[in-house]
Image (spheres, rainbow, N blue to C red):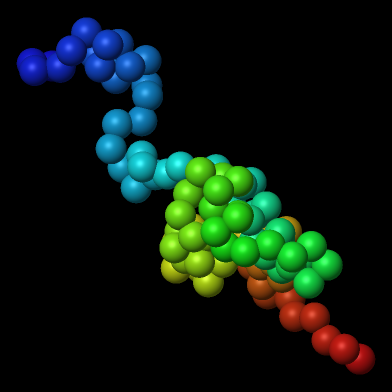
Length: 96
């Protein structure tokens, strides 16, 4: 691995992720869920996108993208899990 420092060689050899679609992610899936949940609860607990961003070390623009699913689209919220699981098995919920 020519051109790599010793620390990079070690990280690469130990299986650290190098490159790839998630290499620049600042948040894990649970933090994304927390941001969306806190935004959904803003009527009871008022908060701005800027305040949410400050809590997680990101910009209010990034918070906006998370809330509107421009970023982190692959992160499924708990309320969606049952619907997706049902859809995966060909089930539909009815209000009968």
